[in-house]
Length: 503
Ligand code: AHR
Image 1 (cartoon, rainbow, N blue to C red):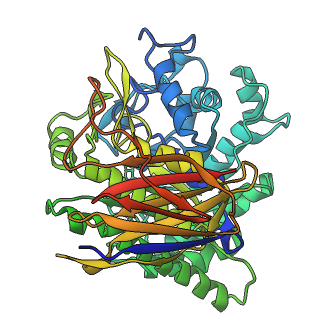
Image 2 (image 1 turned 180 degrees about the horizontal axis):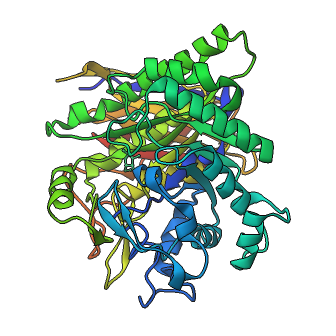
């Protein structure tokens, strides 16, 4: 019998106001994310611009405030000029990152339009792989300036009178990775990042910049990379990026659920490095974290590597089309809890990615768009996780795992939305064997009643959804007790739970 879990939620114990961009996502020119994903002229659901309305509806359901575009690894050899202007004049290009043919039918202009339709904004990486300061400046002028100058006028000539006003820019992508086109050493990259951000700020001082941290925690240069890069560019940047993908290669669900402990360590280590460089610089400036790629990703890797090697230069091939399981959804829920718990420093997080490519939303080329299992934790967190993250006090039992030793059964966090006067509790029972009794003591929330109580519960860890139907979707829970400001319920083994209370 698992130990009972208790959680104290106190209205005034606040971690931080959550930046809405914690619920960001990512669209890369990769596989079918763009072509036959968000864009498919001729599809029955296509609008006048060729964008799939069925996809837009699902993106809007997720309510994603910021979307990173156009890469990813793709950006490191991206020639943005080829992606703007009259479509018939656009150049087809070889995308070296994914060994794909890029038709450039969708580019910066179209994506701006799409993001608007999706009620979102764009976070844009510049190419610091094969290009540098001057091209970043030209792109910025094209996108953001209202001046009577060449690139601003070119945008107008292309039909976009008003500047796009892109505020958040990424200084390249995963520049520590040897796989990256134009990969760099830490000092070399740190200098380039500093000079690029400095020059771009001369053009628009209101911009903010994300500098590349490590591609994942397991990189041999992790730690020293962050320190050396920040040493060079500290004064010019606002965020350091973190990327992490998880997989259950060992087919050990309990140990897979423990990756959120690794995530916690990863976040805290990067915060420590940022603060160490801040201390060395005798600076008052805090560097925040942009976790701009995160998800489960392992189902298709081997097949994709073979396909890219054996069948290069296809247009919009099927790549990274991971079909997510029930247990993958639980891992994504655990990651979201960690981001909320650390929202004083993690200001941006982008679920990678959004459509067809390691994505919560999939499309059939000749059929509908549909929700993967991982759609739901993100949907819940984005819907109910806006406001103040509250510091939870949790007492819970532990269970043994093969790779992480003893880990806690329950991880949870609460968010207070002042405008709606609602408090939401997100809780995962990581114990795959046992139901846990769960008691929440609410302080400062007297008189609040449960408005919504939804959960993902399941015994088949490998259950998946498909275009034919959703095996994995939230159920409504009504079996709880409320005595004054004390709620008691049970958390099923391996479950994601969302309890929303209000007056
Ligand atoms: O999201 C897929 C890829 O993962 C991105 O292009 C890259 O940045 C990361 O390695």
